[in-house]
Amino acid sequence: MRAYIDSDILIWHLHGKPKARDFIRRIQKTDEFEPWTGVMQRAEIIFFMCPGEEEATELFLSLFQTAPVDQAIIDTAGGLYRKWLQAMVLISMMLYWPLQRCIIPARSLR
Image 1 (cartoon, rainbow, N blue to C red):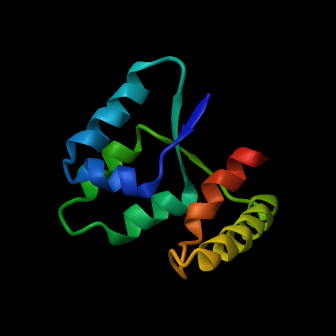
Image 2 (tube, helix red, strand yellow):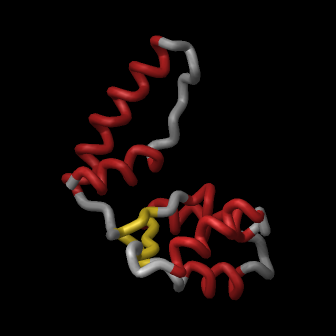
Image 3 (cartoon, rainbow, N blue to C red):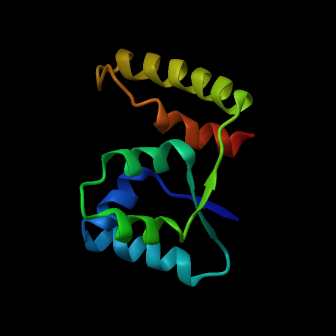
């Protein structure tokens, strides 16, 4: 089964956060899960890494398959975004939800 890892967890791992590190290690040690991330999540990490982090970051990302995004995934993600945004506005939690947070669940629904 694919385990899609969001960019926040990947970034926390790169910054040495123990919970993120332990979580990723557990996924890697089992045959039950294949570690994956999405193209948007990978882009977020690649675009914003600092000078001097390239080699370690690219080595770390090589441990994950990267899932592409197609029209169907974006269309599904758009529906999830609108649905979740409405719910969040109704309960006044927040007005902004990053688009990429909808792409991972949309990919799993396809």
